[in-house]
Image (cartoon, rainbow, N blue to C red; front, side, top):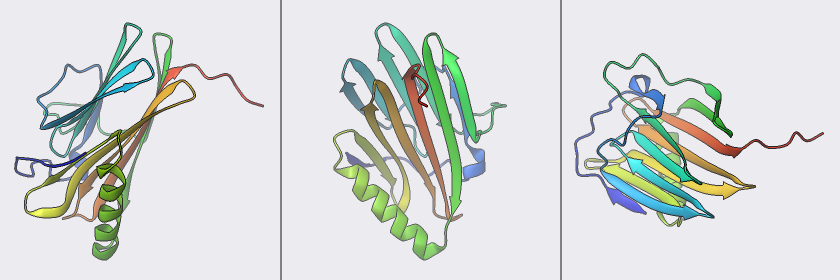
Length: 172
C-alpha cells in the first residue's frame, strides 16, 4: 500500500533516528494491519519513522525507530535480545548514495513495497524521494520485517531488518 503522508517532513536527518523496544503505540500517519499465520502485526508509519506492533499467542513486542526527544538510545548497528521465549534480532545500516543513484533506489523500493500485500509506504508532499517504507513476511515460524527511511537531502537511506520468533535450532 502506497500513501501520501499528510504532514511536513520533520525527521530531517538519518542521525536523529533512535531505536526502542516496548514503547506504547505512538500516533500514526498510516497503518497496515496484517495476519501472518497466527501472528497479528501492525505496521505503523510515524512520518519518517516507524513502529511495528506484534502479537502472537499472548506475547507482545513493539519496535520503534523514530526521532524520540530525550532518547539516549541511538540507532544501533545490531541488537540481539531474548524477549520471553522469543529471539529478537535487529540490524540497521545507512547507505549514502549519489543523487542519481538515490532517485533510482527510491523508485525501486517504492515499486517493491507499493503493490505488495504485506507492504506499507508513505511519501511526503513536495519530495517524491522522501519516504518511509515497510515490508513484512513470515518465514520458518518467524516474523520478519524490513524498513527503509529515505533522507534525499542527505542522500542517505536508513535500512533496517528485524527478525523475531521462537529460537531456531542450530544448523551444522
